Length: 237
Image (cartoon, rainbow, N blue to C red; front, side, top):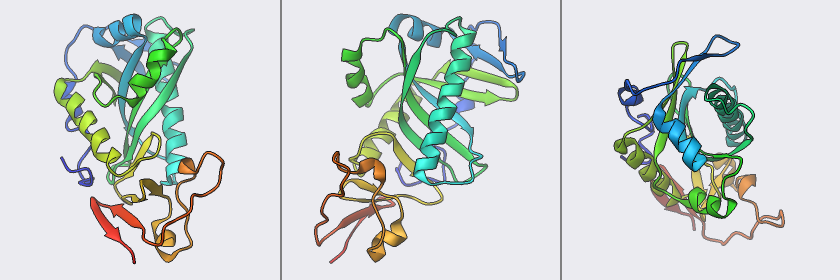
């Protein structure tokens, strides 16, 4: 699947992957949303204290700017994780997340969020290895009606997510999360995502502030800029 064929969902037909795997009795949240967590996710969080999750959700934020979308995705992932942990009896367990991909689709205001979940007690020496990893088991978090399903995806989903991370990593050399907007495919200069492509091409725009140099200053630009967008490289003289 081409990275820049963004008219199609990042993860195809996730509902097919949801099965009749054993689940706990639904936990009814204050807003009447039920949560069902399958045994695979329960085992992962109990034994490994970590899981790589993919959320399919609605994107209702007015802004599609990466800074706003990433902040929204982080908040959304935290809320869903809190609900899930409460359901499996770990409501008092501290956790933190690391976003991997935030993808805004161009239809139905949909978005995908891929993130790594780490529960309190996870070995911090192993965390960096997992965050940098490409291939990991994927757990899907999808709302269907008033039920939030948390299920282990199949190996096909694992491969799709791994391929997506590999593909985006060819263009985006900055830290995760990677950001993709189907309506406004990002451009990259020297491995850094450009926040305002039109302004950048005219010479007045900036790169993503998330990819600034550690000292907070912009790195010097070469006279020749390689810009990658929609899977192609454009070289300016």
